[in-house]
Length: 165
Image 1 (cartoon, helix red, strand yellow):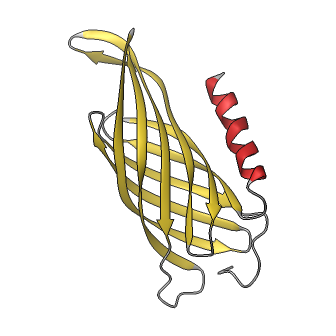
Image 2 (tube, rainbow, N blue to C red):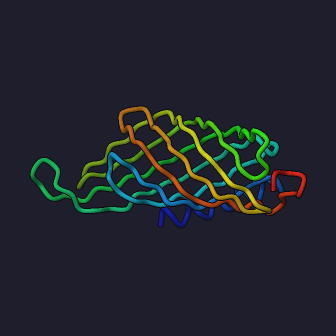
Image 3 (cartoon, rainbow, N blue to C red):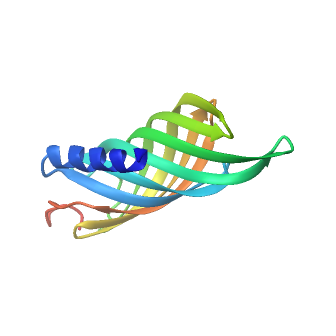
């Protein structure tokens, strides 16, 4: 239910930002939790190079052995990240550094741990018309540190042809 509510909030906030937004879906792999999850994003585009916005990443429950006991483990990340795209004369391909804030909730059995952290990383994207494929490597610093590898797609409804399409 939490995922549905957050999805609705992300889509609603993107709509309210007007025509300068992108909505994204991605698959994520977290190396500390050793699991594949999914990610939702809604970014505000200041221009064709700079954007920022909320992200929600969820690694579903999976059964693990922790301290000799079999328990269910899950991780939820709430992020707010920014990107600045660099094109180097390439028409559709760009790279970008990223940075942002994180709040994570990890559940191990019946216990729950929460932590704040910082995201730092880099990404690469390929844009064509209103669609953008992207891949990122993100390092989360903090008490629940995580290396996350992300592959996804963005849709930008109002992308003009002057922007790197």
